[in-house]
Amino acid sequence: MELKDIVAINGKPGLHEIKAQSKGGIIVESLIDGKKFAVTVTHNISALNEIAIYTYEEEIPLRVILKTIGVKENGKEAINPKESGKVLTSYFREILPNFDEERVYTSNIKKVLQWYNLLASKNFDFASIKEEEEETEEA
Image (cartoon, rainbow, N blue to C red; front, side, top):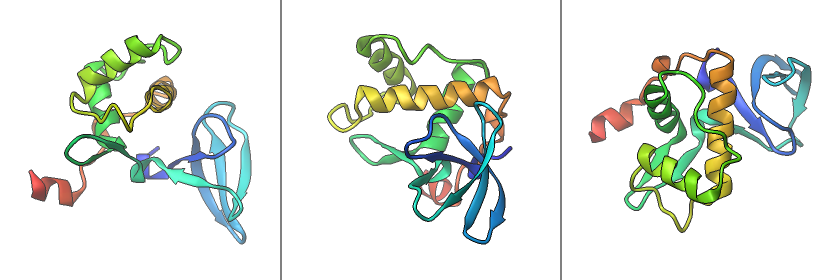
């Protein structure tokens, strides 16, 4: 399982892994219950590889944040996303100290932690997440 194959589908809980192409779209498998279904152009899909979080300077790709949490938690599950907003914000500040608190809401932090914990429960290898070339050029 690679991060580029993991998507979030609007209106569907959890994350889904792309399994195959179909005539009208793609076939995905839920990471929650393992059920497979077809996703068409009418669904709103977000690839985890393409999502970014606002900071005061720039947008940081979600893959970098997931990798950072993976290092911090040693690949194990992070804190419960149902913690209070104060606890979640404090935890997220440890991961991404300069996140834009006016544009990154508690609900966004909950979603990131839910996704991270779901991937961790499936023994996802966070160390395998690669940095894109443009980020290594900027550094």
